[in-house]
Image 1 (tube, rainbow, N blue to C red):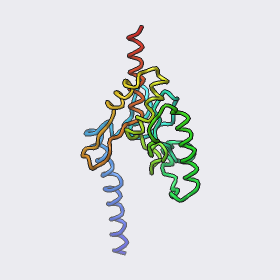
Image 2 (cartoon, rainbow, N blue to C red; image 1 turned 45 degrees about the vertical axis):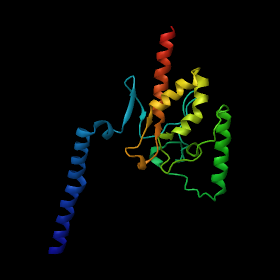
Image 3 (cartoon, rainbow, N blue to C red; image 1 turned 180 degrees about the vertical axis):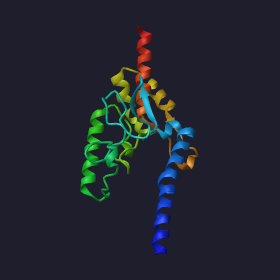
Image 4 (tube, helix red, strand yellow; image 1 turned 135 degrees about the vertical axis):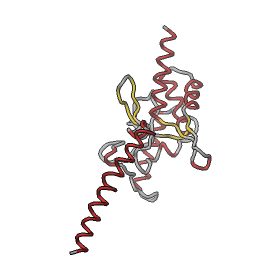
Length: 197
């Protein structure tokens, strides 16, 4: 009976500390020291939430940069079904999917001269990756410039401005957050349009 009583007491104590107190303390500290990150790194525009800097966005029109493909269930970038395709390199379905993506990318980007970057052909392990490589952005730059009637140099300048480097070089390659870049494109174009009026 003593063992049962001590087990129940231990269960209650650990549940209070690890299930209630610890999460509340960590959440409270995160909200104090890292409020933007603690609330999901939400990006707003005109007092409206338009996305998160941590989650990729569905493809938009040809005048926007596109993110990595998403292999989440039911719909692309479905946060409730995060995960990759889990297809092996030897799987014919993966080869077929990549071939289809390659054809679509070539059709959408007829002015692109370099090879298609691998991150535009393959989905990330989570299916939610918000970033693309610099090469992936540069591959799409001629299409975006043409559809927005901007010079290629203007678009490349925005790409350079929104390139995020890893804290240390061996921790990863430079990336670009697609949502932030697309917002910057909209802002830049509005600014250019207001100057020409």
